[in-house]
Picture (tube, rainbow, N blue to C red):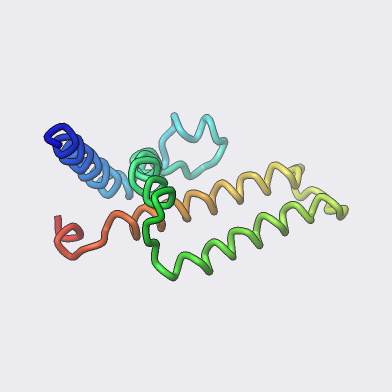
Length: 135
């Protein structure tokens, strides 16, 4: 019992530090280290703490039958429609624009959408009370 309580307090402290780091890093939108891997002009530094928070907070909540907001359902439906439309584009001839291949652009667009969904899910699953928001 004591170990579990200590683990939960430690996890909560780590999540609060990651949340603070994500909010501090939010205005920093171009990190050369991240943009060199993705090839994008905009590579937000805050995606790193948000991704770790996604793994620590949101995924366990989903797997343990936690409650996500009802607004998540249309967002998931939108994501599925976007994935299906990207998959359907392989069956049509779409010429590349400015020498860019369509599959590469689809992957980049889906990655951007996944970043936005990660930001939303972490925020809605982590900030459940006014006290936590004020911290």
